[in-house]
Image (cartoon, rainbow, N blue to C red; front, side, top):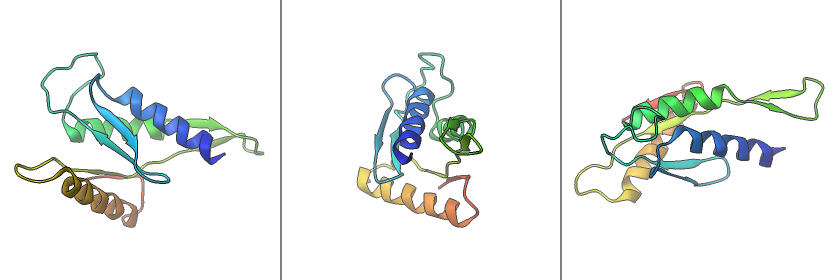
Length: 117
């Protein structure tokens, strides 16, 4: 069942991004999304700021209702998101670490949040 949920979340992430933005699985249930900082609203997906993308992902994943073999018949999915920018002179690894810390702050705060820093 976990694989079904991970695939549904991954599909939702991809649908939330613009052409050229990247998403990859970073760990068991973690994904990294690289939002290219371009003004173009190219394929009609929407605003391109990292926070706007994170909020779009958050809303889309919260809207998932995945059918499962269970008496309730469906599972509701939530997502916690850490958002940050790549700062001048910093490595991508440092930015990912900061976003990961924000993700865990969102989880400690009750889960299902978008934290920016």
